[in-house]
Image 1 (spheres, rainbow, N blue to C red):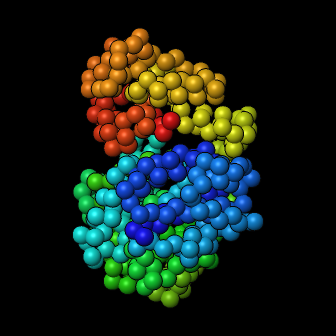
Image 2 (tube, helix red, strand yellow):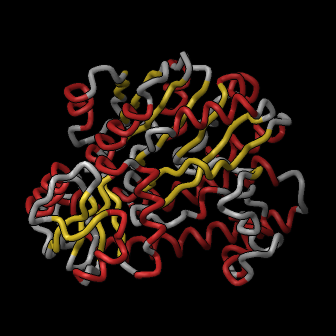
Image 3 (cartoon, one colour):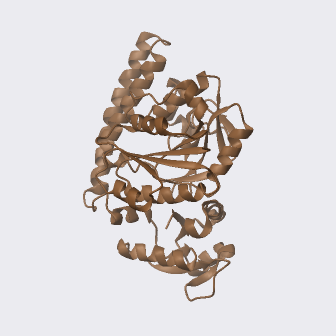
Length: 403
């Protein structure tokens, strides 16, 4: 078995469905198993997996066991030479797995690797490469010095922004949304620390990988889409509490014996203070964002969350995907005006086509489009990312959808 893809799911049925479609496409020519661990979702995630993806191994928990413990359930069942821990709110490209396997095979010193991540608008996510959150690095981030001196090796260390996002480099922390590892690495350093419920387990594992003398690489030749925080957003207070609890666990585990007592106590007090402020901020945002919205587990809510665009909209898709996307927009009652679509190479002329995908900037200007929706199914993820980057000068809103 070449690869085991392990996905922990909690109440993100529609994101999980699209993630699995992309995983199956990426695994087409690879000996691969897919394992989904469901942490007692209240939506119909399990029914969907069983009915649409019968080849996927589903492990159902009768309670929410937390991310780390659920990951370990999948790891104990995995048989692949390589392991991918993948978030359900992601989309991977067609060559993602083959490229990652090739990279690891050509870098025997690599214990693990991460890739470039972009959000649903195609924007680079800084979490793609991070350092160990030593107190100084965390302080620079919290005080804004990281943003102010974004190219400084000292002040920008938290997100390692002194390293070019387009160059392969060694990093210190795996991104939790996409952790590509050798099975032998886990045999050496152990599984996830189950003291962490959610957050922190990726940093803890990364620390142990580095301590074992192995390297962690950032590989930007592969880009994935990460919609970010779709499971944690279901319960904002629990999310914040889990985050800061993870910080306390990590601080105690790695720093308590290596710094003066007063400094360590000050660090813990700072974490508690930040936790209180974070809970208040999350509650406020959650109230104003969701108090008048539909149920967050519904398909309509998922589509409205996905299609955040401004009118008029140009859709980069073939005829079939254009029809699917416009039907979804109508189904979710999203109030936008669709100007038309860009033609693909294999397309026959029709009234919907406003220009060619190869002349996207000119087409955007000709229809005065404020947004472009890119169909991953029509173009492929790599082409979508490259095309979205090519229209930055137009300042058009970009939306990448799996359709």
